[in-house]
Image 1 (cartoon, rainbow, N blue to C red):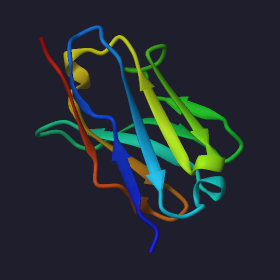
Image 2 (cartoon, rainbow, N blue to C red; image 1 turned 30 degrees about the vertical axis):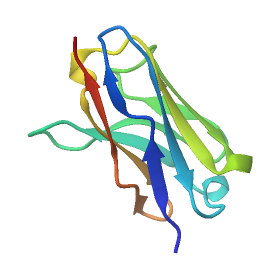
Image 3 (tube, helix red, strand yellow; image 1 turned 180 degrees about the horizontal axis):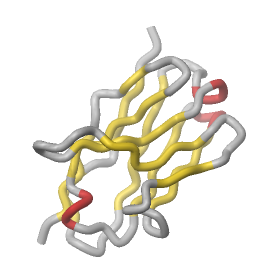
Length: 113
């Protein structure tokens, strides 16, 4: 059974950086669009960034210029580089393999001084 496992979350000060990783237990990323979503307390889950199988990317307006999504199909990993973090970026971040409809368990990012 294929699973997605996120890592890299934690506590960071405003203006800081984190890199999230999403690892797949099988070689699925090469045939899936992969997205990073986030859900803050009391809010709906929202798309942060997505990367297609061809490598094209799209970002939520709120993270454009600060976040970068990229993939390494050979390592079965997709990453989210987050720079210039703000308190409003605090959320649980989830990885999603769209073609399989598969979610990871999430990793918590807290931006606070």
